[in-house]
Image 1 (cartoon, rainbow, N blue to C red):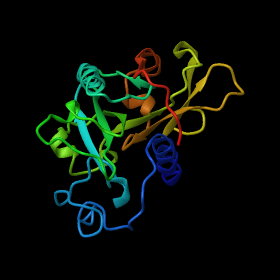
Image 2: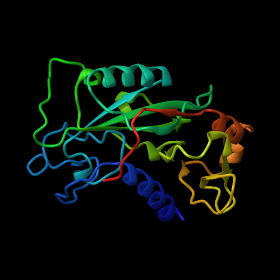
Image 3: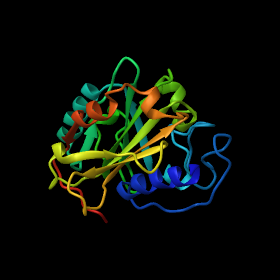
Length: 230
C-alpha cells in the first residue's frame, strides 16, 4: 500500500510538472544531484522532495509559508511577464497544520536568469505551485535538505479543471486510511485530486474532526492562464 500511495502522489505531481530529461539515478540526500552530469546544487539539497536527479535539472524551488505570500509572489511573477497556470489550490492551515507552498520554476537551458532580481521578479519558462500540510514543526531551511514525507503531514495533488464548481468536490476515503481521493459529487467523472498522508496512521483521528469539510472550504482557484498539457 505504501508503494501505491507514493505512486498515486507522484502520478498527479508529474502530470502537472514539465517534461524533463533523464540523467540517471544517484543516492538520495547524500548525492541527490550529480553535479558532474546534471548541474550544481549544494550537497544534500533536495528542495524537500524525494526525486531522482532529472527532477531538479533546470528548475528552481522556492518555498513560502503562507497563502498570502503565495498571492504576493503570483502578483510579482505575473508583473514580470510570467503566465501562472490556473489551478486549484488549498489555503488550509490551522494551529495543528502548518501550510507550506513551493513554487517550481522551469528555467530550461537557454533561459537568461537575472541574478540581480529576487526570484519572484524574474521570468521563467513555466511555473507551478505545490502545497503540503505539516503536523511536525519543520522550517523551510530544514525542509530543503530532507523529504517532507519523513514527517507527519500530507501532500495535495489537485487538478486544473475549471469546469467543475469547487462546491461540487467531495472526499472519498473509503479505499484506504493512508490516502483520499477528491472527486466531483456526480459519479462517473474521473477523479482529479488526491491527498496522501505521511507518518499518520489514521488521519481521521490525528487531524481535526472537521478536516474534510474545512479543507474543501479552503479550495480556491489561483492563476489566470488555462493549463495546457504538453
